[in-house]
Image (cartoon, rainbow, N blue to C red):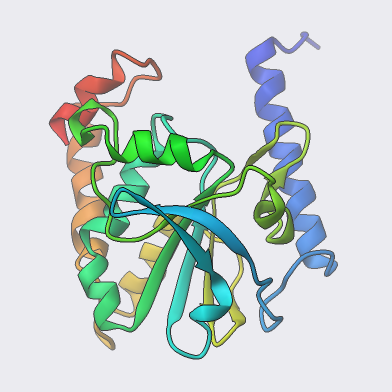
Length: 220
């Protein structure tokens, strides 16, 4: 049996951490469907300004789609974050607020928002991007990787303060919505985004490099 190289060991570590989080969810160490969503108040960036966001202020008034991602200025995260912003108006029609969160500072969020999309930035977003350098939100929602100090990608749908859906990825949410498209009003993101990735997938792939990744962002 060969010895795993450093890249393989990192993949194994991430998989094991993901399984640990799943195990914790199954045995009620962390929030489950039907349980009350942990409240929080945190600094956020919205409209290029710093604001306070408190989850309980939305409860009873709107649905909330809360998603987490590992870090600012990474290669894949912008595609998910901007996709939500692009169809924000359609979520708004469904009385739904979107909240993004990572363990970065509000200053890092602001710098990323002020970076043009074609350069790997976000541009202006139509919803708040929450900062939680204390990592308390990620921990309470079960997506924190303790030894790395960052969060897994996770997505929660909150209805009247209760979890409707366990942690999902953005595109898993899209798949769920696509299955219901003949029976409800849907964000056009469900139709355009997967197709867009499919069209680009055969001819253009994102390269995990700060400079080379800009070719991808310039094309999309």
